Image (cartoon, rainbow, N blue to C red; front, side, top):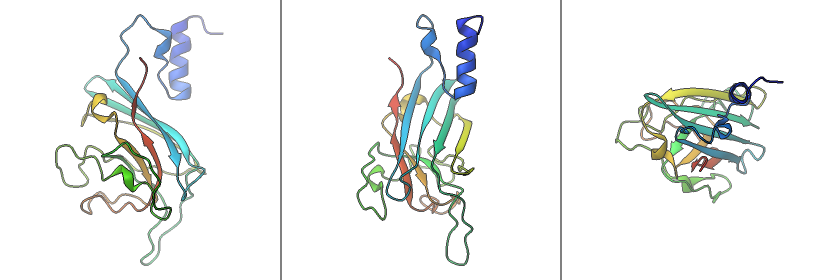
Length: 184
């Protein structure tokens, strides 16, 4: 049993990967947003979430997903499956559309300052499948939480090469989520 509500909240954040600020309705809650990731026809078991939390000097991004395809080595012209490209896309629309090439409704990578690929604000580190599971957090100062509300989060089949223009050749879109404001 935890001695205080604060200790309980701290444990929840570090154990479960989400800020438990709801314990503190009297404190200023940092700006937060989240997206629930759902797999499409190419990865129907894919599911998880992404949190965006305002921290000093930028934003902490946290993702936890299950159901990623296992790594498959590429050969010749065949690209590897995984590590998986992970990006913010222009539109928060997750319509499957073409089952062979789903989630095109999310548009291209979010690139508010017109940078070359590899330096888009929406270019995130790749996700590694560990028996279908991946968990990662990272820091960025490329945007504020309020900037990403309404954008799409996409997990791709292939790794991003961070150089092909305009979007890194990360392959088909396996899963999609819409970024929404968290809390009140």
